[in-house]
Image (cartoon, rainbow, N blue to C red; front, side, top):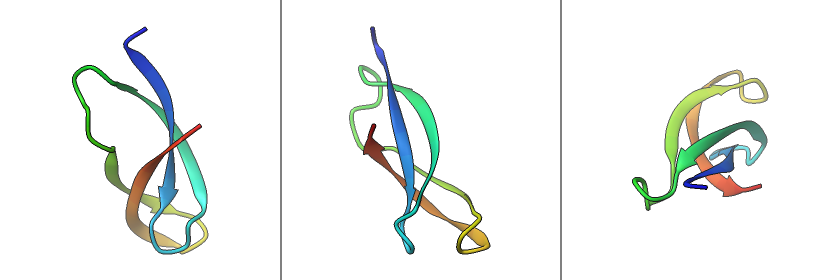
Length: 51
């Protein structure tokens, strides 16, 4: 399969908050997106980690 499951980890507090899928053939670099962190109580950058 071209899609793989990845998790998103908050950059400042390192909490693992979200899971999503990405196409590993089209997107080769690490996934980064700004999402809401309920532990920080604000929008922060979330980076990909392997599930």
